[in-house]
Image (cartoon, rainbow, N blue to C red; front, top):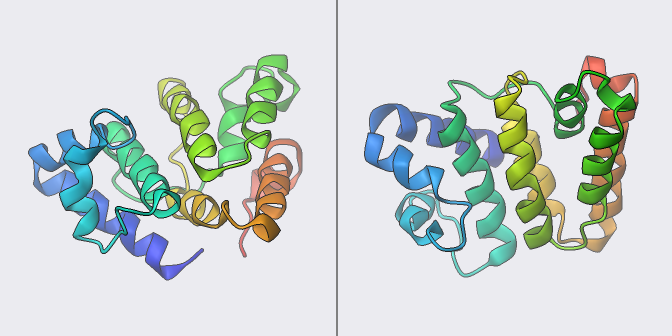
Length: 170
């Protein structure tokens, strides 16, 4: 996971802890109608607001950090989180359908849009804190054709595979 992604997660956690107004603005960062309210905070981390492939991943992660009131970056990867939302884990047909929908995404914007309800579901089911820095890295690289397939493969591996229990480091 990149140093920039980890620093961003730490930056957002501090902003949320120290300022309720920032937390409120960040909770709305992944909604196209209200995301502009978070732009001052994102710009404070030198996010290119005019680049959808950069802005949307940061906004998606920031919004979920604010909604969950995360106090630290977690270890749960997105594939694991989807499986853990269901009693039958990766054998659940609903979980498999949600994973397949995520894996069908072709653009960063689409992946961020599909992730929004998945992240809300994970929070509602009490899934252990996500590894937001790893998710942010994946979303930032998702727009690169040569990386997208690797990212999708990793998400599926985390959902189905043994590595899902151990975590995956790169």
